[in-house]
Each structure stands twice: as C-alpha cells, then as structure tokens.
Amino acid sequence: MGLLNRHLRLLFVIVALAVAAFSTGIDFLFFLLYLCLAVGGGAWLYARRGLTGVRADYRVLNPRTHVGEVLRAMYRLENHDRWAKPWIECWNDSTLPRSLPGRAVDLPARSRRQWLAKVTLTRRGTYRLGALRVRTGDPFGLFGSEMTVGQSTSVVVFPKVVPLPHWRLPPAPIDGATPMRRRFEAASTLVSGVRPYVHGDAINRVHWRSSARHGELHVKEFDLEQTADVWIVLDLDRATHAGIGTDASVEAGVTIAASVALRTLGDNRSVAMTASARRMQVHQPDRGPRVEQKLLHLLANVQADGATPLAEVMNGTMTQLRRGMTLCLVTGSTDRSWVRALSALRRRGVAALVILLDRASYIGVEPDDRSRAELAAVRHALAEYGVEHRLVQRGDDIADAIGGRSRARA
Image 1 (cartoon, helix red, strand yellow):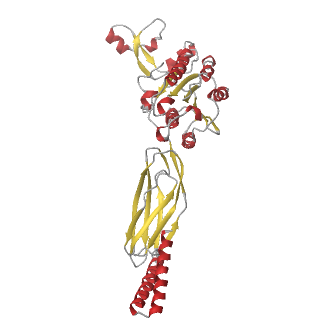
Image 2 (cartoon, helix red, strand yellow; image 1 turned 180 degrees about the vertical axis):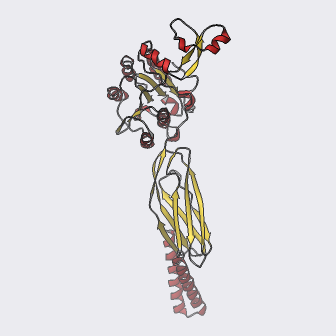
C-alpha cells in the first residue's frame, strides 16, 4: 500500500507539472517535468533489473526441536551479475510466535553472502515457515522488485523435556513375598547396598568383604528392575486447567508427560499414552525411537480443550491395563470420583502414581479456602486408598517435584 501511494504521488506530480508547463510555457517547469520523468524512468529501470543474476535459498537446520531451544536457519545469497547490488532484503513469513529475523545486505558483483539466523522457541506446536522472499528497490524508494524462492517448511516444536535422574515409578504389586520375587532378586545385578543377615537369606547373597569389616554376616540388597509397561494418562479437560501462556498448568502437564515418557523409553520400557483432548488420543504400549517421535508429535499439538470428565477417561483406560503395568496419571482435577477408580488397580496387580497439578496456583492469585480444601480432600483420598502421588505447583522445579531424592507423599 505504501508503494502504491508513492506511485500515485509521483504520477500526480508529473501530471501537475505537465499541465502547468504546457499552460504557462515556463522553461523551469519543463525542466522539472523532464527531471521527474527521468528520475521516475531511471528508478523503474533500476528496480526492474535489481534482482537480475541474484540466486537465493535457505535451509532450516533443525526443523524438529524443543521448547527453550534455538531454531536455526542458514541463508545464502549469490550475485552472478556484473553489477553490484547495494541493497537486498530477505525474510520469511511464518506462523512462529517469533519469526526468524530478516536481514538487508549488500552484494558486490559476482559474490556470495551467507549467514545463520536464530530464534528462541517459546511455545510448542506445529508452525509454517514460508518461502524465502527477496526484495530490492531503487534509491528513492519509488519502485520495488521482489521474488519468492523455495517452498514452505513445517517446523515442529516439541514440549520441553526435563531430565529425571532420580525418577522411579512405583513397582506393580505382584505379591512381593512370592518365590518368583525372590528368584528375581537373586538374579538381579542392581545392587543398592548391604544389610545385616537375617534368617532365610540365601548364602550366595552374602557380601563377604562387608561381613569381614563389621564382624558379622551382611548380605547384598538389590533394586528390582522394572520391566513392565507404563501407561500415561494426560488429563486435558478444560475445566481442570488454569493459567495462560507458558505458565499455564497444561504446559506443566505436557512437560511432565513428555519427560516421563522419554525417561521410561530410555529405560527400554514400553510406553502407552491417553490424552483426553477434544479428540481422544490413545497410543498402545510400544518402545523405540519411532514411539518417541510419535508421542512427541502428539504432545506438541494437544491443548486443554477436552470436555470428558477424568472419571470417564479412567473407566475407559482401566480396561486396557494389564497385570504388571504402571499407571501414571497427570491431572489437575480435584473431583474425587476418579480416585475411587484407582483403588481397584492394586488388586489387579497394577501400580499407580498420580502427578497432581495444583490448578489454583496457576491462576496467578492467592488460592481461596475452597480451593485449598478441595486439593487437601483429593490428596487425603489418594492417601486413604494407598495411591502414591506428587504435587506440582506453579514455579516448582519439575524434576525435584516429581522425581527428586525426597519424594513427598501426603
């Protein structure tokens, strides 16, 4: 629109000078008229051939990345013309929250310029980075010349993944005193420490060096290697979330789900996921890099736009849980109806861990007495049914809140 206005102004000046010059016959007005025609014509020719011999392209170096990381793109301009290009502007249209920065450069004759553009990604999702647009113009800004290079590129921003070095899911309650468990402990190589010998301990578990040091028999203790599948349920009911932008509870929930999933896959265990968004998303247990990418793509695009109550989601999920599985529930719901559904899991040999988001803390104001009472009630119900849980509030370090060395229970 600005360029069109300049064209109209130039045309108006030329027409006005022509009328005045031919009406009055004043030589100076004819001089001004010819000068404007020369400037306008020269500017048009300059802009018309401004991109002659120019080649351009760009390449996104990391089109799949995570929140908090830097998106990088390499740009290249080449001038194959014998004339220099004193001003060329390059940029991309995009749907990114913050676009890659454009740049204006000069290109000497038969030369090449390239540079690296960076932008920090602050929001997960799938975005479009448009084709490269290259523009130049005359020194007076009257005319311009533009070309579009390449095609649109899809950029996927995965949720932030938090390292969980001390993360341990509760083991499935499969009769811890049975001979099967004893045989497993004897075969396990995950030694966690030593303790004094008690009647019934196997002789092959005696740690002779510690026994000699303490003057009495000590035996090795083993960590049980968890090989069962993990089923993550991410509650995306809009009524259970609060906050806006990167400080919203849904972002904390998605980060937790992604971190737990990748840590579990890193332990060579299968992961399944249910995300109760507007369209219910269910992925069956599987393992491997392909599953990691599939889950990250899912979590990159889900929003807290669901309308299915958590109790209903749990009823549909529990029928798919098998003996020996571990259920990891991420929710901000304080409706105790879903807690009752978890009480039956232990009898079926399924472990459960609830990561409870303190919805009131994400609102940005001091929680009222009702919010505190609802949160305390659901935590009490979880403790009453023997369901382990973690509480995550706004501003908490997620790694410490859900997987720290001191993991609090209600």
